[in-house]
Length: 260
Figure 1 (spheres, one colour):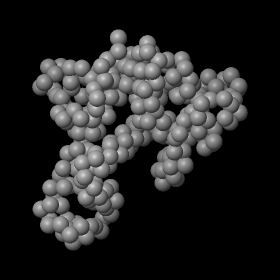
Figure 2 (cartoon, helix red, strand yellow):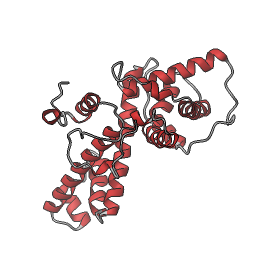
Figure 3 (cartoon, rainbow, N blue to C red):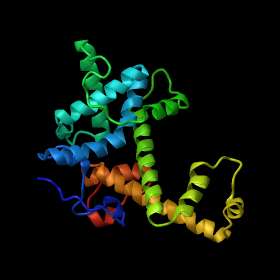
């Protein structure tokens, strides 16, 4: 049975786990093809970077081959309802995705029948050049911990999406200065500054306003991260566990009545 999707999942103001929610993990196995497709759009947005980098680092694929394999993997996952086989009792969803990728690549190599580049697979609009620029400044050892690296890249992807959500929210609410300050201080700041006093001079605002704007932006970012996490987990316990790992607290522990 399909879950009812809220009009705007990011509008959830609290940090507790709602009784009814939209989970793209569950929706990826929905019998309705349109629901599955919408869910896959969300999953691809969160997972294509970790998948691509996993292919480059663990499987040592060239950039062109990693691009094609990323495209192929998600196209086949949608076509074959791969994610409908996910069992939350066995592993976290991100671990399941990584194992699915490994199985997919191993099968391709064993069959030795990979299609040539662009061999009929629907092309997804993904920023592979941007991912390559990140790889250039993120060296990994010759024998990386695949699970740790995949988790790191998944976390990075999740926060990138949440920052994009925050940018859109600030545009929508006329709070461009809030985002500009957040970007300048939290995203771009180097060890030698700027400090709050320098920001106050730069933005022609009192220091107290700088403090308030940054506090609001950080609070909203945390909320948006949790909203994304709600969509990208299948169960209450997985959501709470991932939130503990990412943000250092257990959202809704007292409200849910569930033990970790």
